Image (cartoon, rainbow, N blue to C red; front, side, top):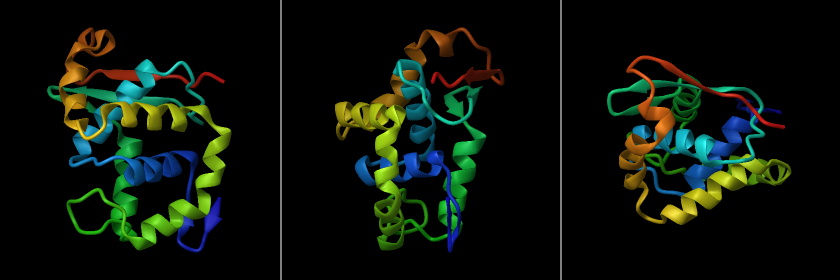
Length: 148
């Protein structure tokens, strides 16, 4: 979809929804959260494969980081260093949020965020116990293919 401020994909909308509904204090937690959501979700109807790189203390996804950087550049966050949408970011989300109802993975992510409540920091600890994370070496790719 094209708007006056750029091109936005389903992954952009997913991140906007997560920023609206969950309190991610660090980008690291966002990456780890999406990894765990991809592992735990039976419905992975995201548009393309999610590729994560295993780090010593979690995972990193270059596509997700690119989207976060785009949001920062477009000034969608309340202040630098915080992952809280400002009025401009919320308006963009509200404009496109209805499109997410046609996809199951964003709802699975929202359900998972709700189950963590205010304890999203647990994601950064839980990832170490995930078998698919433990079997990889630092620097290796972990790929989740979409299931349609």
